[in-house]
Image (cartoon, rainbow, N blue to C red; front, top):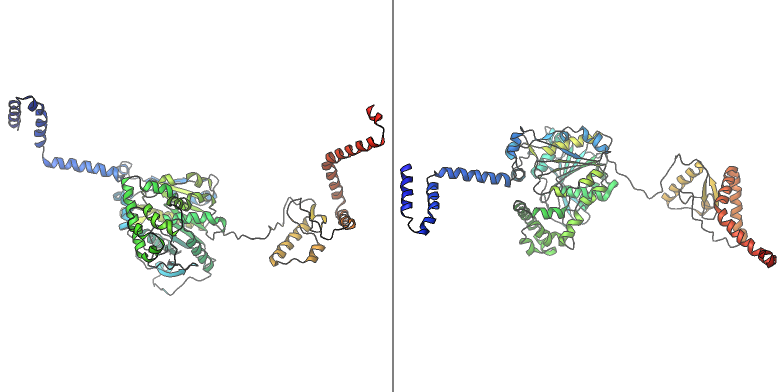
Length: 579
């Protein structure tokens, strides 16, 4: 080889007589040297470059896990410092205080997400289906999995849940274009039923093999269907604690529903998994990078498939040609969701349906789980401060996990968040912090005992009567007011016999009687008032007189002084005042 290189170099020098040829000789030498390198070396270098590119492009973290001894990543918890949900519930959850280790051969959020969609390794079982009809004519499929279906030796489809059953029920809400057959939903349902609870999956309209039977479709902020299902379950099984778990878009719907209804929801506890939180931020994020655009296109294809199932209705209510040409979620929302939901623009739809603005109103114990490497729901949309300010919310975030994946173990047979949800709900169920629905009443508040009610109060009736009453009479009047307002009838005789308080304060509005047309009619109530005051308590009478004199003396004294001066000017001569 050395002789060949010498001969080549000599040939190049001999052939470089002209100036143009001599300028290219170094490059020819380099090219000749490169040709001497074996081809398989180039292949190895190409593979190494591609590997490095894909490692960073797909956000692999295998080497990091390897160098750290596969210790996994810790779970960061965000909560209010005075939150009893954290101190008495989450603090007892071992899984949320341990570390999450990703399956080594799925050490990429994209690999995890794709593996969940294509495979997922869901458990094998069959649901019991219940068709639930909504008030607008729509139909939803409720798929049940009872604990007896998993734990029992004999599978009996005729058995049903007793009306007075106290066994907890977990309601699962799938994500966008997902239904009860999605792998992560089946993991959740099977694991929960295996622990002795009953599970029901509410499929979105038009999914789960059920046709659209009305002109209403679901969207990312449509809470009416969830509200109807929860009220139905609470009505059918009033003694069974109801827990709700929302995933992805289902989590957004869940949090929005909890924020809308506040204390009046019949939900004992809830969990939101990988919520998008802010749809407008999510829309900007998913169209930012090439990899996110691939997800955007894949989800748009799924939405087009959903629309294809219900083409007759979409053709009538939306822009069908635009739906077929949609290349992204935003395109589909522009041509379909916006029109069916009657939103002015796509951004209007995203703003109104985002759950982040409802976080502050959540009154139910809520655990939120999100992965910081989620390729679909960005960390930028997580409402950190709002979650920290709410005493009922605990936010758990992990560095790894992908979108709804969180696979663990060498064989990726389990999902980490499913175990975390199961543990959280079990601890919450055994605690005293399960939420109980607050029944709102139109009656005035009934206060039977108060340390403030120690002195006489003034009652002002509609006929102008003023009376000082003690604690016993106030309490009796309040009870009677509640009973009478419930009946809806108040007799005029009772109004004349006893005074009724208009408010809890010491002041009221005095309404004149229609019969008070003569001076005697005006003086009579005052006399009755003074007689009643003297009978009630002499001390209270003198106290009222003292208060009246002290508070009114500055004004009354000024008026008397001006009046006396004018009268004296008229009686006495003017020279007297000049002096």
